Image 1: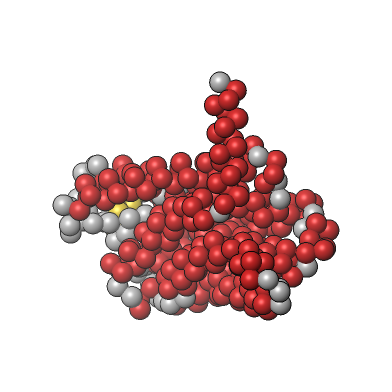
Image 2 (image 1 turned 45 degrees about the vertical axis):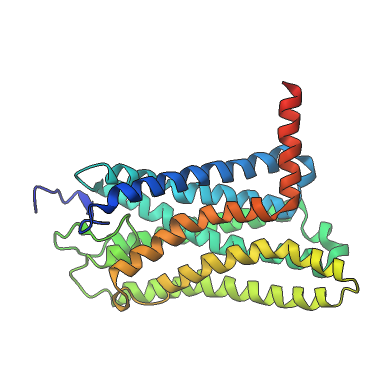
Length: 309
């Protein structure tokens, strides 16, 4: 209706509260800038400082790049829509956004599990760490994680966009996402919901279980360390990762491990904004504020830059 085309979607993020659009525009713009600065700083420091060319920081640079792409896949379009009277996105743009956002979410689930395994090897198998986590193994792990995330999302995206909509194109959401897209269906979506649930279990609960098992072994190994200083140092290498895991998995499990019909759309939009925008910003802040090695590396890199000038 209202002259809208079936080859585009209308995004109804805050259509019933237009006075919030300016506030959301400013908040999202600030968060996006923080995300760009924080993650680009981490990538730059890890790339330029040879002391941080280790498996732990290799995977951290992957996480920073992923979070950078994660927010970029949705925030620019949201900012444009908040300043426009017509909150629309083309059909192709919606499909691309759906696929990229879903792919990066699946990839992050797997990447956090790989990072937990890296910490397990470092603390529980320190003498074999360099052998087990060789450069070749790290590259293979990273490639597997990225290919698995993007490969799985092809199937989910195709199944989602093929659901009959009977002309419906008004998405009650800020961006194109699987639960919001399924709400447009004019047929029974039980099969799609079951498939989405199964994939969510594989890409969220299975990696989370591996993370918990890894940290169970880590806790046992740390408790065997004689000195309190040694135990504190070992725990400090894991706290940032645990904080990121708690934030990301908590919201993703809440969103995807229940059928879309079981929660309100307003609730879904708030949760999606948190894990799609706020969580990536918090990731960069957690790793830059809590990691002393990153602090020292940042000072060294900035010092070299200013000294050379």
